[in-house]
Length: 155
Image 1 (cartoon, helix red, strand yellow):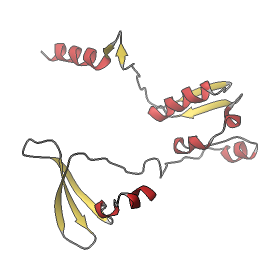
Image 2 (spheres, helix red, strand yellow; image 1 turned 90 degrees about the vertical axis):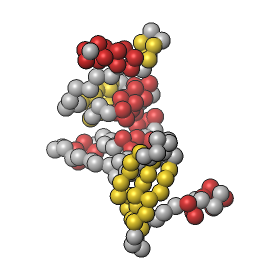
Image 3 (spheres, helix red, strand yellow; image 1 turned 30 degrees about the horizontal axis):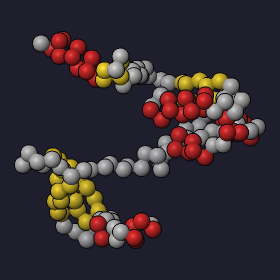
Image 4 (cartoon, one colour; image 1 turned 135 degrees about the vertical axis):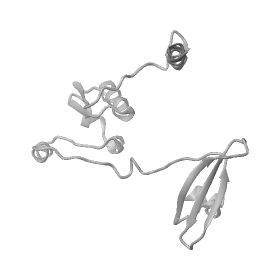
């Protein structure tokens, strides 16, 4: 809020506004056209260079509960959503066996982090295969290999 006030950013915000559509500019220039509807009524179109989609995935976590979870927590176990991970201290992790449920980018980042912070064991549980490949293979962007192979198959 201090930055918002310092640079007078409030005038740039559109509160209580619904984004109806997002599409690329039709004049071949870089950017996006947003069709919006304000709470006061009326639709409008605005042009932007960049669009950030901030849907609140990490502020409204989708949490699940498992049989025995309450007993686990009552005896000192910790259950956290990835959005809450930053709240854990080294004491919460060191020497502990850690189960990561899921295999998204956040899950793998957290698994590496807890392993490096001294956990005794890290286990990842997942329902679907997700193949991780390095960004670079022998100094070459891995996408180059993937797209070249795909091109050979297509033609």
